Amino acid sequence: MVFNTGAALLDAIVLAAVQKEPDGTYGYKITQEARGVLELSESTLYPVLRRLQKDECLETYDMEFGGRNRRYYKITEKGRKQLMLYCQEWRNYSGKITRLFEEVM
Amino acid sequence: MSRKEFMEELQVLLGELPKEEREEAIRYYESYFEEAGADQEQVVLEELGSAGRIAAQILRDYRMENGGGVYTEQGYRDAESEKQTPVRYKEENQANGATGSGVTITKKGLSGGSLVVAILIAILTFPIWISVLATAFGLLMGLFGASIGITVGFGVGGIGCIIGGVAAFAVGVFKTLTVPVVGAGLIAMGLLAFGAGCLMIAVVGGIIKLAIWVMKGLINLLGRIFHGKKEARA
Image (cartoon, rainbow over all chains, first blue to last red; front, side):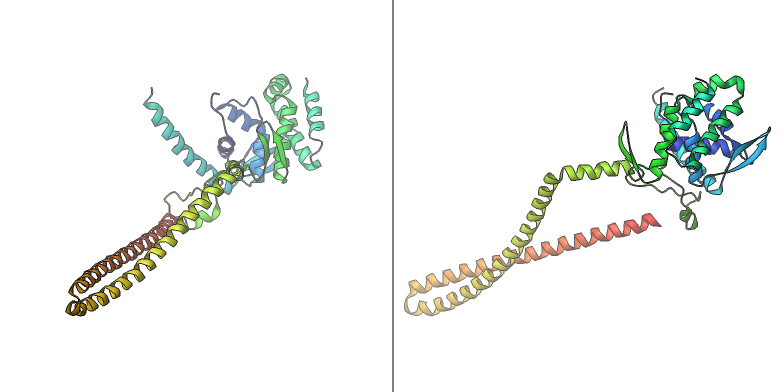
C-alpha cells in the first residue's frame, strides 16, 4: 500500500475483525481478515494481538478444535468502547480527507 | 527455509524472553502454520517474512513494556517517549460524558515522541531563549521602574512647582509695591512654575489612568482564560 498503516489503525482493524465473531476468533482467521483490507507483508499480527490483550481490549480462551487446542480471541467491553472510538475518529478523519480529495478528481 | 527451521530460529532469537512469553509466541506461530495447513507451508513462510524481523518486533515490544529503551533505525525509543497506542478510551469520561455519543476522546497536546524532541530543542537552545527571556523580563521591570520613577518624580516635582509658583506669585505681588520690575518678574516666574506644576500633575494622572487600564485588561484576560477553560470542560 502507498500509505502507512499506523499502530492505531492496525489495532482498529484487528478489533473490528475480532468483534465480528461474538464467540471469538483465532489468529490465523484474524490475519486473513486483515489481509483482505491491507497488505501485511512486513509484519504479522501477533504483536498487535498481544498488545491488545495486555491492554485488556481482547481476552483469550483455549478450545479444542480438530485434535489440538486453538486459542480464541474475544473482544472485551473495553475493547468495544475502544473500537467505537476508533470508528468515530476514522469517520471524522477519512471524511475530511475524502472531501478534500473530491475537489481534486 | 522450512517451517521447522523457521520455528527453531524464532525460538533461539526469542531466547531472552521469559519462558511464558516465549512459549506463547512460539505457540501462536505454530498454530498459525497448522491452521493454514501443511500444503500452505511455503505461502505462510512467505507471508511471515523473516523470523529475525518478527523476533525483533516482539523483543522490542517486550523491552519497551518493561521500562527499557531500545535503539532502532529511528533512534532511541522507550516506553515513556513513545506510546504505541496514543489514544485510549478512558472509562472516567463515560461517567460524566454529556456528549451525545458517550465517547469522549482524550488527546494529548503533544505525543510522547514530539514532547521529548521539544524538551531536547528547549535544552539545546537554552543559551538563546534564556537571554531572550532575561531581556524581556529586564525590559518589563525597567518599564515598571520607569513608570514609578516618572510618577513619583513628576508628582513631587509638580507639587513643588505649584507651591513654589504660588509663593513666587505672592512675593511678586508685594515686590511690585517697592521694586515693580522685580515684582513683575517674580509674578511671571510664579505663574510659569504653577503652570508647569499643573502639567506635571496632569501627566501623573494620565500615567495612573493608564496603569489602571493595563491592570484591568490583565485581570480581564486572566478571567477570560479561566472562564474559557471552564467552558471547555463543560
